[in-house]
Amino acid sequence: MQIRSEVPISSLTTFQNEGTVREVVSVDTLADLRSFLETHRVFSILGKGSNTLINPETSIPTFLQISPQWLPPEVRPGNRLLAGAGCTVHQVMKACATAGLTGLEFAAGVPASIGGMVAMNFGCYGRDVSQVVTRVQVVTFSGEDLWLAPEELGFGYRHSRVQTEPWIVVAAEFQLESADMDTVKATQARFVADRLAKQPLRARTFGSTFKNPPNQYAGALIESIGFKGKPVGAVGFSAQHANFLENLGGGTFDAALHLIETVQAQVWATHQVVLETEVKLVR
Image (cartoon, rainbow, N blue to C red; front, side, top):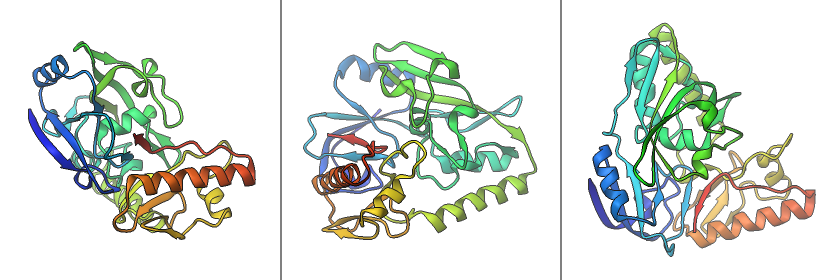
């Protein structure tokens, strides 16, 4: 177990806003996690922070991370891949390419962890996690260790029961298909290139700010009210993709939240459409 105090938010999230959090605890064994749960009652679970905006004034005293060392990607019989929640997408892509396994390439290039992808049912290019995951290992806040089937996880658009239940994702298994190694690498590279062309992945951003409303695109709605590529102080929605909010340098939680709420209000006033946040706001 690793415990860090007064940790800069810039080292915890891809948005890298200013400020610190009081404590970050990283665990890499079930025993460590159970020990943590015995002594901590109030905490927030944090992956790679690529879908998270943290308020440095939050009342949450501790952030919990599952270490990538908990369970590195492991290929199982039957073209299944098992990976710990703390593993990065990059680690999993390397394992898939080495083993010649296809089915997860839609996530290539996303700076996320496996636990976060499962919790939010990450999806893109017409695919999502629920279509390839076979079982998920969770630990309850009381320390119980469970393996859950997909039908028990209540997957929906950018949603799973992990978001509302007292569960901590610690591992997930995916059913993939055998493929030529070079083909897998080429497919991954194609998805990465497409993302780089369409999304500001090298910027300080937490990815999509809003979920897409039914039959509409959040980015198009943001562009329609004039916020695409328009800096508002130290933050602004990207000129490359209007649904990506960027920290332009010195961005704060308050500045980002104010712009998010301003856009929500203006989209409602103009289109009578509710924009629901996709980014996790830790207030």
